[in-house]
Image (cartoon, rainbow, N blue to C red; front, side):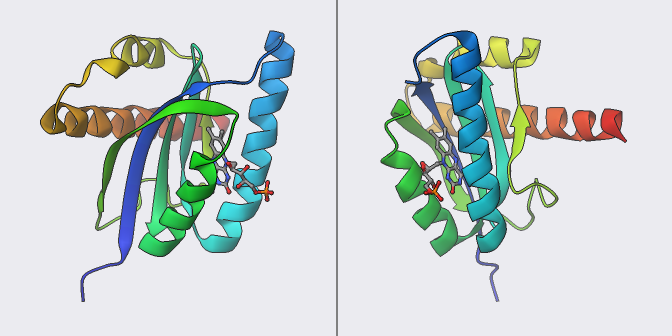
Amino acid sequence: MMSDLYRLVYFSRNCIKGTPDQVAAGVDAILHSAWRNNASLGVTGALMFNAGIFAQVLEGRRHDVEATFERIQDDPRHSDIKILAFEQTPHRGFPAWSMAFVGRSREGEDLFGHIGDATDFRAERMQGERVFEILHRIAIEEETNAA
Ligand SMILES: Cc1cc2nc3c(=O)[nH]c(=O)nc-3n(C[C@H](O)[C@H](O)[C@H](O)COP(=O)(O)O)c2cc1C
């Protein structure tokens, strides 16, 4: 049987206004509801926040990823949501994280400098892969450093 595991990758613009501390508190609140809801559904992934842009990977059963993303899409804390990939995958990239958080990084800044540029399906797909790979590498590095 084909696995029912899906991965969705998107990016969006932050709409949380305020001082850097207020924005950080807003992102923290998002993470807390992500941890709670995703853990109960078996959804995993990573969220990056950098230079006013969110990029997120969501993985899980198709229905659970879709239901989670429907809530996320309606959230006024971000806008201009652009899906880069939604496809079946044989493995989770973030099996140990109900939502890994990746903050500012050099790689993220480089990535987000170009993130709006994809003009066709192929370019979007490649960007989706890049977002996934960068978030994956940073999450693994941070876990290794923390251990
Ligand atoms: C950038 C961004 C990422 C989010 N990621 C998740 C997520 O992974 N899981 C989730 O349940 N909610 C996520 N949310 C929050 C949802 O939009 C929504 O507020 C939440 O699921 C509502 O559930 P709650 O009432 O239990 O907090 C995210 C919101 C934003 C703006």
